[in-house]
Length: 356
Image (tube, rainbow, N blue to C red; front, top):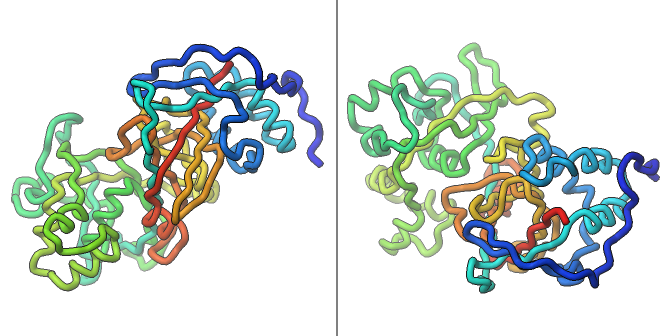
């Protein structure tokens, strides 16, 4: 049994019949206070599984939470009962709703960190470049589109010598750009292979358009899965660029070293802290601030979950009050992280935990 935690206030649970405060407006959402008994599954989660994510989040604490982070760190070695009692004493749950107070169906999807083979130099197999940002790229100002990058001499000249690595499959490169980061098992020029991380550095300022949606609109596929998209591409090589160019956005990367500690976590999210599989979510920051602990409830064909997660990232498609993207981990095409992220699309309920 862990030793008793010292230096934090006694873990006296606040009674569930206390007077609730008024609802709060939070940008594009409304937070309605509720009692702990209204959270489905509260008390059944293994809180120690989220504690590392919470500690990492305390590296960049949300306003109003910084004073609690010392206690969060101390409670890392606490029992599950002590952790739960502390959360209930220090925080109050708020149901996240639309600005007008209505309860949307909500949507939970998943994302992951792909692991792909790559080369440091172009070869007959590895011919698809992943670029670092070009000189003169300015946030908020459109640069060349994906099609222009592939066809215009001026764009290609600007990117000359800026390839971070080379992949074998242009669809894999697109997946990496959509996920925003990944791990590369990269073959160096001297023959060695090592794993590195490539992380989002910038994009070309064009709007993201789904190639899956483009294919669905043309009735070329029946479902917008990557396996269906890849199968279509193999059958229609003459139209591959047409499909890829339907998404004008291109993401540029930077390479990061991958230490043994770094490899135990995901990439850094928008909060600038490493993501924890199954416990970090991407949210709309105009509805839920980064660093907020969130109670998540979902039921569907891919996952039945009622758990505490941390709002630590965002994404271009993550818009709305009750919208989240669950970070599922890292792996290749056959690994659980990919399979879960690819299949996850189901209803969602969210409760933000805010200090009393």
